[in-house]
Image 1: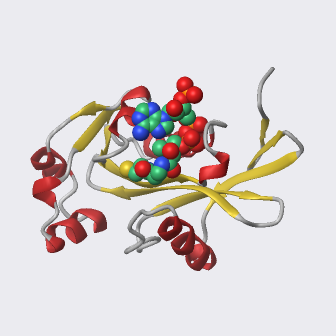
Image 2: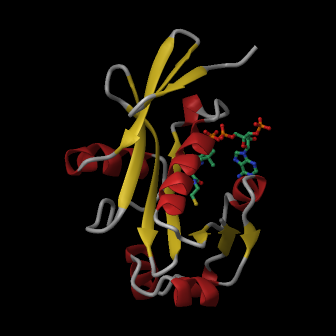
Length: 167
Ligand SMILES: CC(C)(COP(=O)(O)OP(=O)(O)OC[C@H]1O[C@@H](n2cnc3c(N)ncnc32)[C@H](O)[C@@H]1OP(=O)(O)O)[C@@H](O)C(=O)NCCC(=O)NCCS
């Protein structure tokens, strides 16, 4: 038996185990809640909802953020970031649903591939079709993406691992 049932209209509504969850695109007003959520999940929240980026969140009926994803853009590539699910809600498919929202947006913008940085969750993204790439390739594809600029300024690029999925 599925753990949740999801209906798609302009928002995605998932009903499972007595709780309802809505997946929607984030607005500028969501920034404080998103930053707080990402920080509590141990992910960097700098540059969240920067101009030209798109974020999605999943929230409970009470308005609590329980999952997120963001997409930054290059010429023909996107940079997936900020993929997280609240610890108590993991394993319900929310992470996959957030990644799918980003894929749908990438395809609608006719991007050819999606990259991401991940040192700790590579196995998760490999399960979604990503293959290990190189940081150099990612930087060439997304030279002005906020996360690339941030990691570059912090000197983190040399220790990062890049992943790529061809759309
Ligand atoms: C990675 C993460 C987003 C997955 O969220 P989720 O909502 O539980 O994901 P889903 O429900 O779509 O998938 C769960 C499955 O992924 C697997 N999985 C989770 N993390 C994994 C990892 N690091 N490596 C391999 N598999 C992983 C789970 O074991 C589970 O497998 P199952 O379906 O066979 O039981 C969540 O664990 C998380 O928020 N982690 C901390 C933040 C993070 O590292 N984000 C990545 C930033 S680059």
